[in-house]
Length: 188
Ligand code: 5GP
Image 1: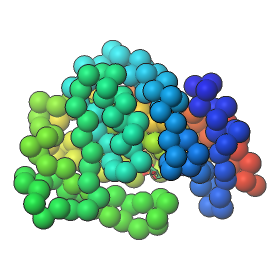
Image 2 (image 1 turned 60 degrees about the vertical axis):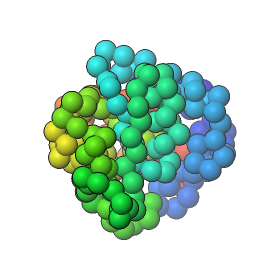
Image 3 (image 1 turned 90 degrees about the vertical axis):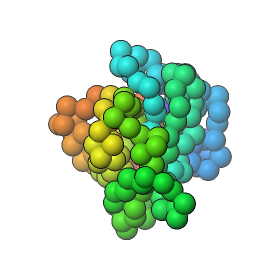
Image 4 (image 1 turned 45 degrees about the vertical axis):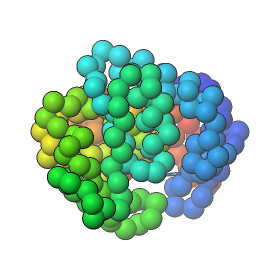
């Protein structure tokens, strides 16, 4: 998506270890106009799917997910990173965080993710696919159906995209980073 690619090139910042920061318009300050365009594009790319729910993981996935849910007219469920003592009928999985270099539990209530759900996962970044694999596990535990996975930014030099597409999942990314070597952003 041209608009996003331009913003990444002009405002994105590289950090050692292959981290891209887009704090000016996605991860800290958010640009709702860009978010609206990106969400519309993601909704368009999954238009042939019968989606009745969008799912994401807190916190950075929530903004794009709720905008996509708005376009698709469906509810948005976010997996929680802290397991609340009050959650009923909890489904839990473990996710390894690429940016924090540690594992954490994420959970949803099976009151909101059921066998009748056909879900679209939305997240800001796809790197090694660990968050996505955690969501696949929760979807399977619930007996729901995964319709697809949409990302704002995919880091094509990490293994997540290949892993998910290799499983036959419909994956869409609005911008694919080919390399961040020498702290230079190269887009596909
Ligand atoms: P994965 O689970 O695919 O390995 O990593 C995706 C998650 O890690 C995303 O939800 C995102 O929050 C975070 N992440 C991975 N790489 C980056 C990055 O380069 N920049 C930012 N801002 N977040 C990242």
